[in-house]
Length: 205
Length: 55
Image (cartoon, rainbow over the protein chains, first blue to last red):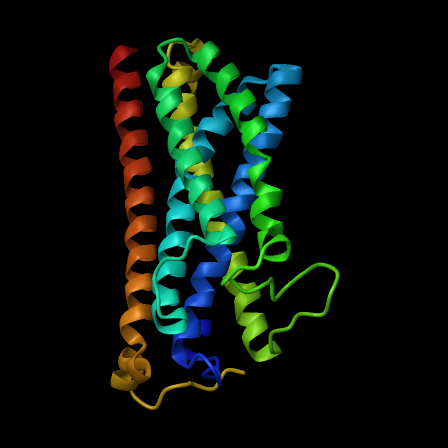
């Protein structure tokens, strides 16, 4: 709301830049969620923590939704800004690959009747697929892309004006909160599904 | 920092011709999030009901 109604109009892009308040949090979270899946995969493969396996398959559909939002908002933003809704440049293509990877992981897990086998295979695939995350992140530096380079980095001063930066940080935190709630709900579904025969769950419910 | 960028609701909706882009993205985000929350809540309710019936 802050970004949509209370920030000034951009000098170059006009009001279309307000998409940034949804596009950037979605893009940031699409990669963060995959990183979280990769961490959970390592935990599952090394220590065999069941909850980590539940977390991987809980995050995947939410990651797919968030990546879809990132792709859709980017495409819509591209129409007034670039004059095209799609360009096969490195950032957009690698993000599309991430979206396909999320869908592939969900389909693969659903195709197994043996959950343990599915969890193991999924964990390995998530770890292998993690190679795409630094590619997405660095794509704008490694290749000549239509997509601009990052406005906010950990090392440099943000190239975005504070009047636009603070609402952006606010929207990232807000979006992060919503997605955490979704991950908790999704994990709850997985626990209810996979532990349904256990007595502790019957006592709990 | 907290000054309204628009003088009227019409101006906020139109956004100098960019409203169609901004609001379509807002709509998709709202639809996706509402669907996800509703879907998970429904699944939880169904699974709890199933568990209670099996008890």
